[in-house]
Length: 409
Ligand code: PA5
Image (tube, rainbow, N blue to C red; front, side):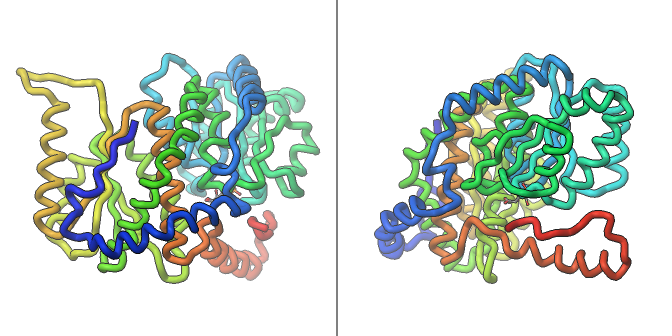
């Protein structure tokens, strides 16, 4: 379930005539999306036989281990990680996910290895390109740990790789060690890969009902019009110098979902010196921090409030926390609107199906939004630039044990 409130806390900031003009282009952009090489997440659906293979593999991994270590970064990591954080309390299963690969902090790496040392774990290495620096290094570190614990043959059974079917570092490792592996779909980029094996396998390992997520995601296509409308409003915000969008939630478990959105929007839209900067707040915590700026600071921000409908209600002395949280939400919406910070409100059920729908809605919307900026939503040229600098530094120090080949071809 999603309910859209585009207007109530936005009205006086919108120019209806201009909005109508933008809306005329929707069919053109829908057709454009149909032609995109990297829109497999929208053009096709994951089949039952693929889902069966994911179940089979996760059942096998569950039998042999209590933990699944996911080695991944960027779009190959944010989807399953954010859903795990959001819904892990809702299931009855003792299996757990551990993540590594999105930093090169010595402290974090040591702590994770120490934690895993005496645990019974398997590994899912996920990288579309199969060449990402962090993943290559962390894979080798973890492989060494596994080899200390198990015989080589057993290690081969404990590593599953998800990568594209083309020559790469990981593909060579698959062949060398006979790992089982899944193909990362060629026509889906990392940050659009929520409903692919990249995220469904880890979520299946912790017994999430992935079919609900899959069904919700594809049913979310019914909101293509709303997604375009949202993109058109965002574009108007930008044209009126509101360059920052704050994704706001009132449930801390959804914090990493806002991180998922930040990654999706920033990496898709932030190009050619254009795009809206995504930030996020978790309230009530951030009412005592960024809240001051949102109320009183520069008029460069608008908000998208993700209003999650929780069933749970904690009461104390006849005070309902759910009601109190809702009352605060309403008062913040009103007081921000009275100043110069307008909001869109998206009401969503706290379940996998609804968040599947919401994720399709956001993916469609960021594509439309990028089209309105005349930007390609599917590439990330800026990400290559720091790597060129890194190559220079590594070459100068003559310190390249790991070849820094171009990751994206
Ligand atoms: O969304 C994207 O395309 C990126 O964030 C990638 O997911 C990220 O760079 C990791 O790439 P790979 O899966 O090739 O390791």
